[in-house]
Figure 1 (spheres, helix red, strand yellow):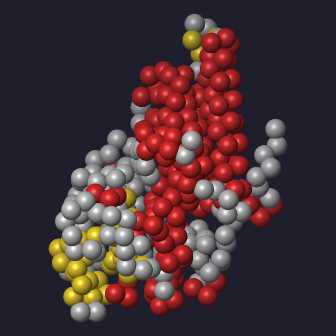
Figure 2: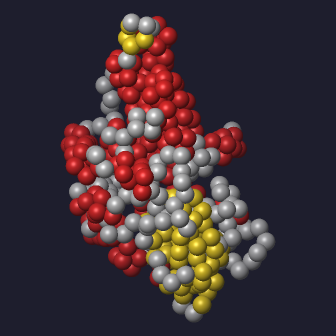
Figure 3: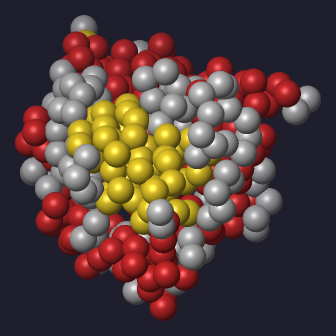
Length: 382
């Protein structure tokens, strides 16, 4: 069945993504996994090749591409190449930070930050979650207190992608001066650059996506200019809710790409390996498992493709985004498990792509809101 999502421009962009993976990442990725770090020159090269900040308007150095299908192409090629952590790192930059600057940033804020998003000179992270507040952002305790024309930011964040080696973060902080459980208007977003008082812990030793660093962030009375406030005071949670569809669609797109890759990896392995004197594909059970993998990967891809088109039209709401994120992430977890089983003992070896897909997929039912939160979101709207 021919896939109708893409047009000629997208396929030309795919050639660029394929070439970038082959030239800049292939043969180096395993070392990055050991070091828990994507080298800075990779970010700069991604910027030079037009792979960062696709939605940034031309006046700020970008291409002003508001067609999310180009982001889908990037994900598919990074995942197909086995460079899943790079896909995640770019997602954090482009899908979890950039939208806030584009939608709510002042003209001055955009002028100062957006060119740095595009050229790869600044790596950013999204600092919302805290040790005592994961998906429950109303439990955030990081605070920002007025000090003249500035703010003093204090608190701790955890599970922050790009946190250890990033240059700046969009930070959710409480600005109502209270300590009781917060209301909807108690939080504000800030774009915070590394400076005195802004530090990080060592990168976490994760089970997967190890090249993409994840760490704790600490803020000890960090001075933040009011010019780096994103939008209005007290509107932080409202802004986050408005941007949830893109954040969750991004995860669904990655999950769908992993589903397809898992099938491809299982099919290739089954065709190459034999047992009891015959190829694995000659066993009916293997063929049935592969048939299920192909069908479920196709169903997931079709669902995600429809959501991408809805997002392009401005019609993907929070509930529908929760549905597609729930389905795609749970499917990725299930399909990579089945594909790993087909690999047998080889599937347990990290140098095999299916092992990396398996460990990467386990994050997707947690990241961006757990599956339980997705179900609650969907259930409340029934």
